[in-house]
Amino acid sequence: MALQHNGTASKLAKHNGETSDHHPSTNGKEEAEHEHADRFTFTSEPTLEDIRRMQAEFTDERNWNQFHQPRNLLLALVGEVGEVSELFQWRGEVAEGLPDWTEPEREHLAQELSDVLIYLVELAEKCHVDLPRAVLRKMALNRLKYPASKVHGSAKKYTEYKD
Image 1 (cartoon, rainbow, N blue to C red):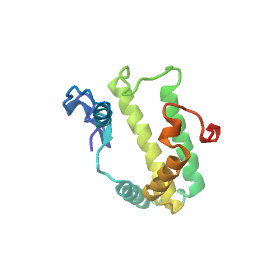
Image 2 (cartoon, one colour):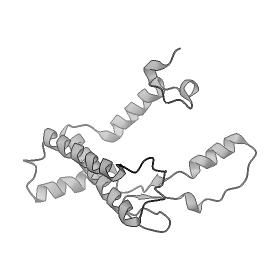
Image 3 (tube, rainbow, N blue to C red):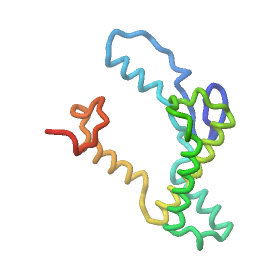
Image 4 (cartoon, helix red, strand yellow):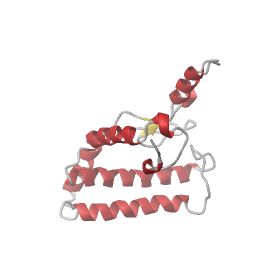
């Protein structure tokens, strides 16, 4: 799987915003829909289940299940998140798409984010959490906590909103 970004390839995602044609519109709704069409998107494969299966095979082949228990996986996940944070440390605000980053810096980030995802998926497996299903439930809950009509353009926590 490849990440398409200004013609360069990396793993697990692609950027398709450069291929869409923009037609000027006076309709705000059409403009908003076009804005969403230009968003970064992931490739459809591998799925989370594919990633879970690949990691399970990798772990089994090395007899590492004895070490890959929930607590250990959580600590490894936290360590990998720390490695991602180091890549952003001291940079100040970073623009979406990382326009000021070199290709080796982007690849390093892709590798560290992959480590985070792999450990997260394996932790979910060991805890018997079906991540795709859990995400659907969580998004439904978030829609209730943060109705767009009430929170649009605000970064407040749901407990700070008045009915």
